[in-house]
Amino acid sequence: MKFESSLNYLFSEVTNHFWINLEMAMKKCGLHSGQIFVLISLWNEDGQTQIDLSRNLKLSPPTINKMIKSLSNNGF
Image (cartoon, rainbow, N blue to C red; front, side, top):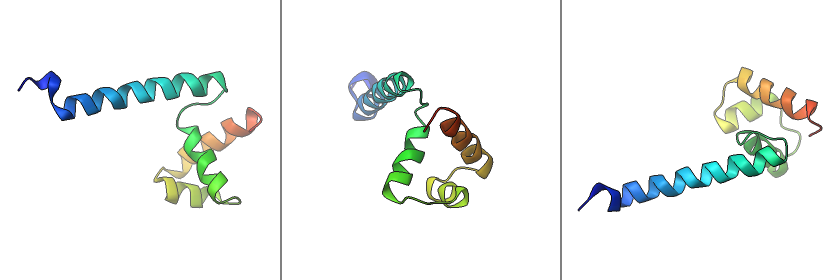
């Protein structure tokens, strides 16, 4: 079996195309693709603190802080 036809290769190709398309769609909205997960998390449970977001999204507090500031500065 050639590597290019393996399930792992095909899955990685689909994943790569998904992220490229997500990045392009979010850029049109003024977002970075990672920020969508903050918005989804807040949609699911409004009122989370930055510490809650950090824990739930498994991101460092400074990363969450930067994302929240950017979202706020862009009107989100």
